[in-house]
Image (cartoon, rainbow, N blue to C red):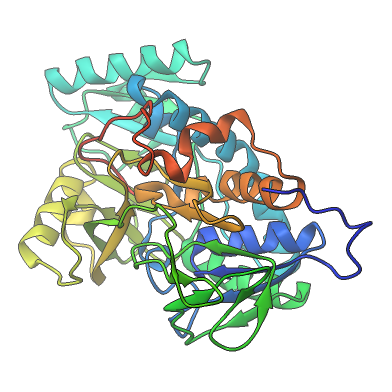
Length: 397
């Protein structure tokens, strides 16, 4: 991609971002901060109505990726992005005029069986090998940190660098921050086709120098040349992975930390406690399965007993977008000037600031960082090898 040189161009670079989830919004803010004119298009009527509003907001770089030997590039991206989050949270809070409930309490990982204790030890060893802070905890130490724990907890880990936010608050603050920064937010705009050429013509008649695709689980727009011939982006279709989640009312004796086990997580916020999540690959429906929700609650209550009777506030299902290798698509597509920020699967919230940094560097300076090479969107189009493999069950950010 050719670098933008502001000394040669009388007007600022103009970029259209298609998709108003956490990825698209982070890119829009980063570009605007660097002086780019930005418009965000989304088919929904509000920010983050797809995946982001249904996420848990966990920023778990240590838990998610410490033991993923076959996804080292993704682990490095996750760790880098986690380090960027404090600055992003502060910027969005300052510009957006309110809190996003950015928490640095850390996360607990808990073992309930002998087999899980072995898994816990392997996770601790992986954290140490990668220089990630970790503390081993006895059952008694866990109970001191979380008095509501039942006797099911045999031992655990404290991951002090894992963080969390409230996605709903993040979206609210982003909306205000972007509006005040001069970013045009265009809701209810289903962008099905974009005409390419020296500039990109959007369906509403606006023209842009670059287009960023951040459409989440939705199919990306089609592109045609000035004479109507199709342009091929080389992007794979998004693979849907359904996830169901439960929100319980905050109760006395409830958890204070994010808590992970091998098959459930608990993420306490000020307004409720989230429990998740199922992993249903290939499913794109939003139906809530009450049996699945009951199983999530039961698993959480095995650890924190008061959650068994906590009033249910809501339950929902969302669709996470992934790729054939479960790694995101970040960078220029086969169409020059069209940039992808897609397929972030369970970790869109966590990976948002690093993705924004990579995309802004490419669009403005033509810079492709070594960290971004593994996520080249053209890797499926050219049959190239990638250092990733599909992962199994996991947790949402």
